[in-house]
Image (cartoon, rainbow, N blue to C red):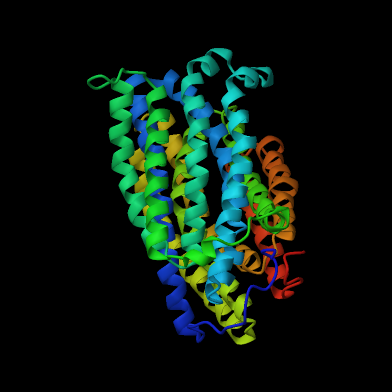
Length: 463
């Protein structure tokens, strides 16, 4: 049986009423948000430890490998995320055989992705130089980049079991495991970078080795926990082997999600590279704004995934009233989250900008720019959060190709030209770049909202 087929009888799911649905969304979103913050904390830990121990050149060398790894990781993670609405439906319908089949399908998709992306990252130091990157930096970061290539293997496995646990509305289990990764990663960095006992010091490469070891241990723990918290009957695990007819529906839903995630990540990476051409104050203000944006984005990310899972449940139940409750509660929470982030970022913008920079003339200029950008960032969350919720609702309906096109159009066809025009022609510098990014976010949100308002176009994932 294909994963796109109906695995069992239709059931109604709870809660349903608006207040109950809002509580269900919050219970699901909070652990997802905390997981995102822990993952960001691991990245910050690597950056701080490499910079403190080996200096800015080593940090730059590691950053190249880290950014390239991130692009392919998010492509893979988004693709695996296409499993979520199928798995949620199997959970709702108490279809143990379907869950087992979907787990094996996810393993096949992860293995396919590993076979594609690991060689690309592993060989990257040898061919990125042809694109104009500094060969010396690439050579210095070769060990770290190759360690991160291997890290993709357990990390894509982790994303599979994170997807399964989230789709089954058990993200708290994953949060407990993820929280343990942060101190273990820091300890591993120290051991492998500096050496300990029989373990030799390998410098910045040690941060990559630590990531691989911690990810492998995490994947092992997740597999054990997933099997214990949601056990499957032995008969279900002996279901027939999967085939391409099982894998293709997941790829059809998931690959557009992965491309959309890379599209969004790519425009911010491009903005960082472009900002490097501007003055020191512009680069400094951009860096601070980007860091705050990354932390704040944990909220819309959590709302997106929570809305996706709850809408997938409503779709599995074929319940119009439940769909309306999920949609209304999701958008209400998005507006509340937007107000919270606006108040938080707006109140912190001036002291954060003043505290981040020194009081030289260049520092004061950067602080002034950053304060304005942060205020704009807080305001734009009234747009970002509803847009993320709309994307999640569409994913829950297995509608992912049109949202992918909206993201490409919003960021790259509208956002990038607007940002370049304001930066270069209107001479607005980094402020122009961020206005362009905000314009891209706004356009993408409007398109997503129109799509949601139009209703589901296809119950089987075709857009």
